[in-house]
Image 1: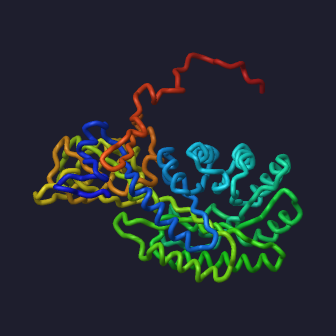
Image 2 (image 1 turned 90 degrees about the horizontal axis):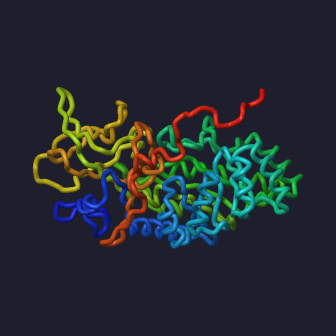
Length: 423
C-alpha cells in the first residue's frame, strides 16, 4: 500500500507529494489499511489455537489513532507503563484484554492495574511480586499474575533489543522459582495463572523462539509437580519485518512451530506483536535542505533528524530511503543526514538516490514502529506531525509543535516559589 505509481510515491491512494503540500515536513504518515491487514493476519494465525489473545505491544507506537484502530480489530494491549495502560483503555481496549509487562512497575502503576482488573500482570522479580501481593491485599481480590522467566536464549538480533539472555534485566531466573512457589502458595492475594517469555525484537529465524518455548514447557511440567497448574502462556512478540532483510519464516510457520512445541497443552496462548503490526505501515517524509560534497562523501542534508527517527543512531538500523518522485537519471550515492549537531545524526549511509536538489522530498520507509514514539526535543526540535491515510483521504492526527508548545510547563527562574526546605 506504499508504492510508486507513475513515478510518484503513494501511501494508499494519497500522493505523498500532495500530502507534503498540506502538512509541513518532516511528518509521519501511516496507512490505516496496512495496519488493519497486519492485525487481521495475526488474528488469523492466533485463531488456529483453541484459546488465544493478541495483545498489541503499545510501546511500538502508542498513538491513540492507531490504538483505536486495533481496538476495532479486536486486539488487546501489552503495556509497559501506567500511561500506556490508560491510553489503551481510553482508546477502547477492554481491561480484560490488557497485559502489563516491564521490570520497573511503580506502586501507582500496579494499583492502576489492580483497579482495572486487567487480564494479567507479568512479574519480573521477587521484589515486584512482594509489592503486588501487598497491594492486592488492600483491593480484596487476587492479582492475576504470570511469571516472566528468563530462558537464557540468544535471539540473534541487535544487542540492545535482545531481552532473553541471563545478562539482560528482564525476567526471573530459574533459581528464584522455589521462592516464587512458596510466596504464591502461602498467599491468598495472588492468582498465578501463567508464564511469560519475550526474548527480543526484530527476530528473523524460528530457532530462538523454539528454544525459548521448549524451555517454558519444561517449566510448566516442573510446576505441575508442585501442584501449580499453568493455564496461560504469554509467548511475547518480536517477529521481524523486512527493513532490508525479512524473516526466514511466515506467520503460519510460526504458529505451526508453537503447536508442535506446546503439544497437547490445553491453556490460553497470548501473543504480543508490535513492530509486525505497524512497522511497515509508516513512513517519515522529509525535505532536502542542502546538498554538500566533500572529497569523501556526498551528503543530502534533510530536515528530519535523529530526534525524529533515532533507530539508525541507536540500533544501527537500516531503513530504505526512496525519492518521493522517481527519476530515470543515474542514481548517486548519498549519506542522508539531519541538522542535529551530532555526528551520529545519520538516517542512511551510502543510499542510492536520483540526483537530489534542495526542496526535493524523500521518504524513509518502515518507520511505523519505534519512530515517533522515540522522538526527542534535543536541539529544541519539535516533534513531527503525524498523518493517518485511508484510501484517498488523510487526517492530521498529531500537529507539529510550535515554539510555545515546547515551552509549555517551563518557565524562567524568578527566585524561590516554595518555602525553604527544613533539613
